[in-house]
Every structure is written in structure tokens, then in C-alpha cells.
Length: 292
Length: 202
Ligand code: SF4
Ligand code: SF4
Image: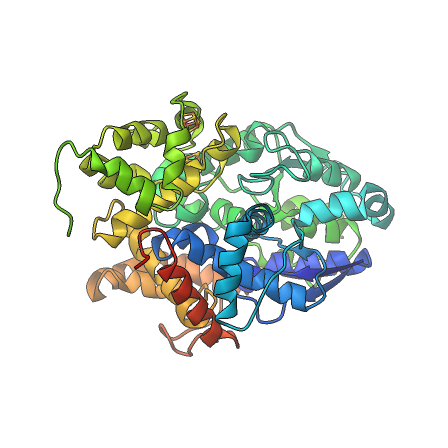
């Protein structure tokens, strides 16, 4: 099993604990990841301020073209915002011949071309559909027994095509967490938006969105929230002290990547492989009995 | 602001169909209201997507272009997956925001500033340096205000740095952000794409 990894800008910085844990987990599951060479930013959710739609598609088409040159394997885009940008361009390229011709004319300016057909996949998609729950279960050495987890998918993870999971009520992460032995709580807000790309610049406006998500998780007795997206992880975690002031309520909820929990359940090193030391709202307390 | 403004401008809808990215999709809308109801920021918006479309059809140029709503879209795609007519709601919202900004109309100042720094970084280096971009954005407020903003965000920056989730920088450009190898080609592509975008031809 070989895939091309599109890390995206956030996996190199704010989501570095995602990158560490994704690589550890895929290695343990014997899945080979090759980074797309010389990839560029996907435009994320804020591309429209400076760029036109065609310019944003150009960014993504360049990455698709590079991936094709590198063997044309399926691409894994772990960040949901990268995923949605790439999957959208890949779909529209394959379905709209006129757009495909335009994009190739543009790619030609930089000596590249793309003939379509590459599949863009989310981490959850590959784990759930290609690796499968049986192999995940087989790798578990320290089950997350008794750990109550709120599965937060975020808004962009399964949208807009619902290619691998329901856009309204996804279950792939629930099932992966259950395979790790965790107790997954019912979670209404699982696909409600956290503020996404405008959270940072519209914090007062978006604060209630995060407040509702964390609030429901806490009310359901969750010890932590599990996410598959670095932007969700940032928005839900690092501003908690500021949000507590805005919302006048206590939050203090660890927000960890599903891959961090996997690494832990696989018996791997809590810091070197699961990168738990990179979480700002520490999950050590709730995970203590497991990390021992 | 370069365009002359009129209270009723029947040509506005044609302008949107022609010049705004995905603008033609407004024609498909049957005004069912699903997008407006399901939008996570519906309470914060004055009109919401459905009403924006009807304002476009009614030729209410100023009300559309000045509306903070067109820059309050979080890009969550809820509307897109629920719209019974397959309208690219989110793409039109983004397209309208881009179109307004190009004409010097700034519906949401902070997002406009941040987004510009973000795009500049892509254009100059091919990527977004997550330390550099917030630094540059903070400084757009001017030196004094920028300093306060920096201090306010300092605890967050420090936490990220100490948790290995941010690179150390003395200031914007120190040390400089790395460029992708193919940056020259990428710039050419982006310039070409801009020239080929709706409303930009010729
Ligand atoms: S959901 Fe679609 S058809 Fe309904 S009002 Fe919104 S854009 Fe129009
Ligand atoms: S994509 Fe934008 S307009 Fe559509 S529901 Fe989400 S925030 Fe609202």
C-alpha cells in the first residue's frame, strides 16, 4: 500500500503533532507514505481574499500534476481544509472538460500538465476503507478501555461529496475509536462548524460555535475530543483561555487527533509517536492510566 | 470605491453573473431558504445567503457589496451539501467577497487583512509560514496597535513555540521563509489564471 502524502502548511507547524502521529500510525500499519515533492499551499479556507477561484484551482491542480509525475498514487490530505480544496479541484477537473483545458493551459506556463484521475483521500477514508477496522483492531496493544471520547469530525472532513462517509452523520471515526476500545459518546455537534478559516479573525463571532461543541462534549461526559483536522484542533484547543473570557465559562477540554489515540492504543511512545507533549491543553491526566 | 452606485441598478445582476466567480449559479436558486437556515453563523448575518441572492436579483448593489455577510462565510459547506438546487452557495459568497475587495469595499476588515497577508505569502513563497503570516497580519494594525495585538497573542504564541508547533522567528522575514523550488513557475501560473478569471479577460 503506497500513498502520496500532501502534508499542507499546517502539518509543518500548528498541526505538527498530527504529522508525527500520522506517520507513526501508518508505519505501524505498514502503509507507505511518500511526500509530494515541492508541493504548494492549497489556498485553505481564506484563499478568496487574495485569489480568484481559478487561481485557487491552479494551486491544487499543480499539486495534482506533481503527484501524477511522482507515480499517480492516491493522495492522502490529512488536513480537512486541504482535503476539500484538492478533492474539489480533482472532481471538477475530471467532470468539466472546459475547466480541465483551462487548467492545463495554466499549468503549461510552469512546464506541467495533468491528465486527471488521481484520487484525493482523507486520513479517515484510508484508515477506514483501505486499512480497515480488522487490521486496526489487530494492532491494538493497549485498548483505550473506559475512555469516553467525543468524536468531532468538523465541517469539511466528509463534505461536500460524501465520498467515503455520510456528510450529515459520519461514523468512520466513531468506529475507529471503538476499535481502539474507547467509549464513543453520541455527539450531535460532530459535523457542526467551529469557525474554520475565519475563526482567528472573527473570534468573538465564532466563539459560541466552539463553546457549543466543547459544551456538548463536556455535558456528555467526554474526557476528551477526538479530531481528524489540524484547523479544528487549533480552533478548539489553543484559544480556550481567551474563549473562557469571551464565553464566561470554563472549558479546559483536551482536543487530540484520532491518530494520537491510535498511536497510544498501539502501545507506541506517548511523546515520540503520539506527540501528546505537543498538546497545549494536556491530555496526560485523562490518558495517564493508558500511557503507563 | 471606483464604481458609481445607484439604489436600483438592474445591471447589477448581469454584472454578478459575468464578473463574480460562480455568480451565474444565483440563477439556479429557487429561494427555498435552506442555505440561510442551516448556516452556522445565521444569527450573526444580517441577510444570509438566500437573501443576498434576492438582493442581487433586485439590483441592490450597495446592500450586497457592503454586506458583512459575504465575508462571514466560514467555508463549512453545509449549504452546499443541503441546497436542493445544487447552487454553489459557498463559492458565490467567496466570489462576492473577492469582487467587493477588488473594488476597495471591505466588508470585514480583519479577515480582509489576514487573507491578504495569507495570499501574499502563497504568491511569494508557494506556502504559508504559520509563524510569519500571523506576525505580518498583526503588524498591519500599525506599530502601536500591532504591539498590543502581539502582546495579547503572545501567550498563545509562546505556548505553540514551547510545544514545538511554531518555528522561532525574531520578526517577519527573520529568518526568511523558505520558497518552494518551483516558485517561478507557480507565479507564472497564478498570473495566467488571474488573467483568465471571470471579469478579468481582455
Ligand atoms: S438552499 Fe439553494 S435553492 Fe435554497 S435558497 Fe439557498 S441557494 Fe437557493
Ligand atoms: S459555507 Fe458559508 S454560507 Fe454556507 S453554510 Fe457554511 S458559513 Fe454559511
